[in-house]
Image 1 (cartoon, helix red, strand yellow):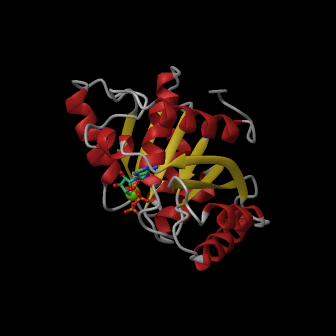
Image 2 (cartoon, rainbow, N blue to C red; image 1 turned 90 degrees about the vertical axis):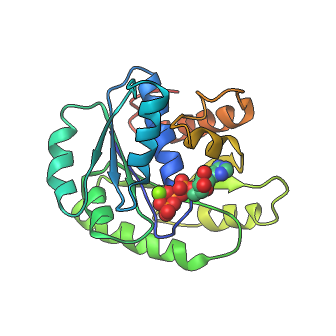
Length: 220
Ligand SMILES: Nc1ncnc2c1ncn2[C@@H]1O[C@H](COP(=O)(O)OP(=O)(O)OP(=O)(O)O)[C@@H](O)[C@H]1O
Ligand SMILES: [Mg+2]
């Protein structure tokens, strides 16, 4: 299973979601490759912190790849790993397109803060174009950083659900401090203490809802 976490907007939580998916899958005993395809290299930095926190026992393999190298390298590497999770930057780059041409799943987090509709239209266009080359690609949207009592959630849900190209995952990740507290230690939210059980439950629920839609490698 090759999952690309992307979109055309910065700061939507791509790295947060990608690193947590990798850690949740690795925890299930799966052989995970995490690919940092963003020149900011946040996932690589995260993995450095993780290396220090867990004394080298990272639990997954990290590679940094960009540009069209992604296309050839991932196809070869996906033979070796059960799951490949690719974190891309927040722009429509060659790296993101190359990742999508070899991916099974495209996951796009959206922060329901203000109504920036152009983002979805751009992503829909990207999905349509990539599907000409990679018809097996399944695209999903997800609400991330949902604030309690947010006034935007309902309208964003309706808006994302209406897309014909991107399927809405009916799960929400709340805006929770555990994400940043865990990230600076290179931890998944399921590893950070004290445990934020609500955040963990939300993330597990999201993964379960994602994996029932696709030929599931796991049922989390
Ligand atoms: N559900 C969440 N709750 C609280 N904070 C979050 C959540 N998701 C992400 N964040 C925080 O939001 C910030 C941006 O997240 P992240 O770096 O994952 O976004 P990104 O889409 O990868 O950004 P970029 O486009 O720069 O690569 C980080 O500080 C992260 O800790
Ligand atoms: Mg990022």
